[in-house]
Amino acid sequence: MSTLTIGKLAKSCDVNIDTVRYYERMGLLMPLDRTASGYRVYDPSSIKKLKFVRRAQSLGLTLEEIKELLELHHTQEADCADVKQRVQDKILQIQQRMDDLQTMKRGLEKLASACKGKGTRLKECSILEYFYGEPS
Amino acid sequence: MSTLTIGKLAKSCDVNIDTVRYYERMGLLMPLDRTASGYRVYDPSSIKKLKFVRRAQSLGLTLEEIKELLELHHTQEADCADVKQRVQDKILQIQQRMDDLQTMKRGLEKLASACKGKGTRLKECSILEYFYGEPS
DNA sequence: TATAATCCTTGAGTATAGTCTAGAGTCAAG
DNA sequence: CTTGACTCTAGACTATACTCAAGGATTATA
Image (cartoon, rainbow over all chains, first blue to last red; front, side):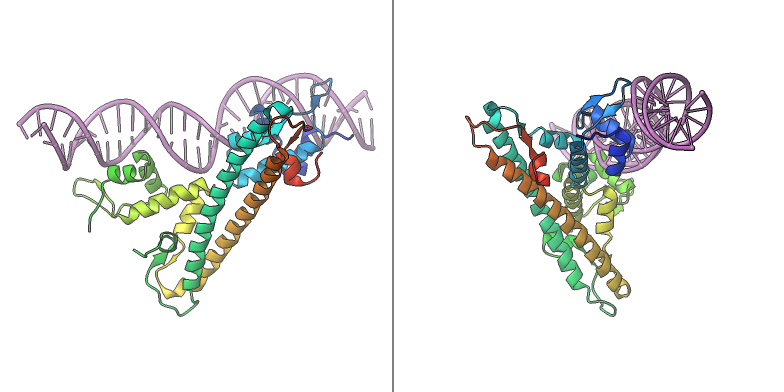
């Protein structure tokens, strides 16, 4: 199986090389191994993981939360029920975020439909009126 | 119409008073006025705005992005078409976030359904396998 | 009318998430 | 076998988003 240097990994995910080292310090992305001279060695699954980290960050998750997500896995049957519980908690959190985004999107859609284009005269309004209901 | 001091505003939104002043410095939440002695005066709509800021932050938006959202409004008909365009751009961004969250949620749901509870023996797996497809 | 609570400003300190630099070692191509 | 690209560590620096402290003024309450 092929391996990667830190530079190749960073480049393939369009991430700063120091950021990869930083994630390692934070416990998110450990290299598979080190060469005799101390170079980090990664396997291709690190690309998947690194991309996951970036994607999750863009969704507003902190590195701490992402670390928790990545640690949700089972290595033995003993903690399977426990993993399931934590996964379900995460699902609820994510659903909550989606609901909030949906509310915000609806507010924006109402704002957009109030924009009739050039020539329309509207009283001052903003997303807030549409987000929270009655215009103030 | 009733007004609020900064302390009341902060408390009603469960936000640190210094955070409210910080948002003002960042141009997000300006007081309606100042008293003769320099105290900030807010009207009740500031509560709405401040809560919106916190909610948007929890969705991963930066203060800069939130500021842009709050500035999406029309005061004159002249820029109505322009506002509409920017609102529609924001809607697309939000939809993208929702789609990513949906993908993540589905990954977690598959992970949860692989957890049969105590007594199940599974090979090592994590959200990554479910998030990106084929288990590695 | 004390005195406690609240407000003001300025400026420093903290946490998170990087990003960059310096100085030195390692690896790959010509 | 050198030269350039790459890697290492340690530590300093940056941006964002707060949070706190100091020192002083103002306002509300017992």
